[in-house]
Image (cartoon, rainbow, N blue to C red):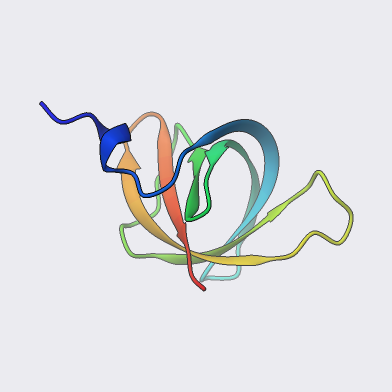
Length: 88
């Protein structure tokens, strides 16, 4: 059995922060980030999940005027949340 952590390109840093997630539809909501790395982040979302491949933007609410980052949904974990990859 392969451990997910071993397949990751970048180390994860646990950091639970409130983020604003804006979906491609223009709707947005505040959700909690679980961790992040150089290439993406994981968002807690125990209810309705987006679809794999959905594009959205994310902005931390911890800092005034934080940058808005473009992302793509790359992994879904029902009952827990979803992983986003940064689009550079």
